[in-house]
Length: 160
Image (cartoon, rainbow, N blue to C red; front, top):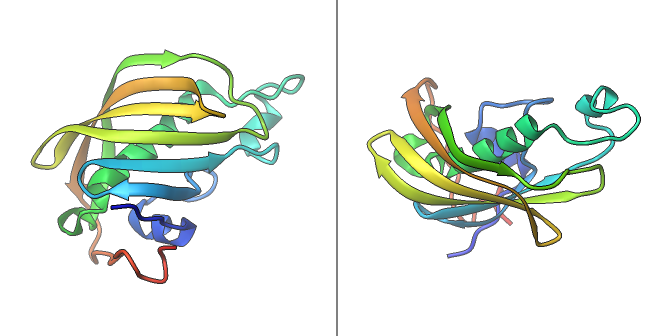
């Protein structure tokens, strides 16, 4: 099954907002198994003012944050979890392989390794132009937070 979610559908699922919303589109999702997200990296990102003024490089921690946001969507796309808040629990086997710079399109693939209740482990790979730029395993937990569950379904006007 292959679905696409635009930024408005993502905003319904993730609590993040500018400048911390670091995923622009979901280009593929297989419910309960895999999600592929896209982050367009532009020189207009606020962090480029200080990282680094002479040579703009996306901070590694923000690459990992964008990966975490995509990872959470594996669980948040399930109807029973849409009202929950995702928390990063840990990062294992992290490798940052090359810089991400303005003009890059970060393609982030998250594959669910295991889930137990509201906790899970996800294999992450981020690529630019087909080259791996970062990889890791992320642990996360979902906690109760929102009062109203959102309803994003394949075929809604929020999916393309």
